[in-house]
Image (tube, rainbow, N blue to C red; front, side, top):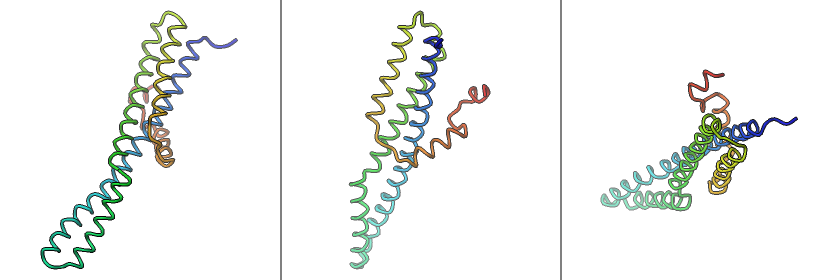
Length: 168
């Protein structure tokens, strides 16, 4: 005999919440990494640019030229890689995954207990599944190392609220 549909819905929502936790955290890790690269390229570019200007006015043409070349390389990398845009895109995706996880949890823990029939429960679950599928398609790809780091953190309990830790 198969379990009641409400148990299957709860199981599916729990799977989705777990997926959203891992994906959200992986996107936040990717955002942190791209933010680091933005600063790694941007700060030296600003410093070298200012130093090159000062060297030019002091008639240190060779030094000014070398620094200007460095600025050109760093600026080209920032233009090509767009680390600030990638960081923002990953942060946005991470926020959306965690929002979906929270909404699904509230549906599972509170709203599902008030649903009168199986059809309404399935419709509610399907809404969250559709959101997840759309988010999966729209989100940028994160690196495998971002996911591995996220999984380690989640496995250590970093994604749990105090109330959830107390239930363990």
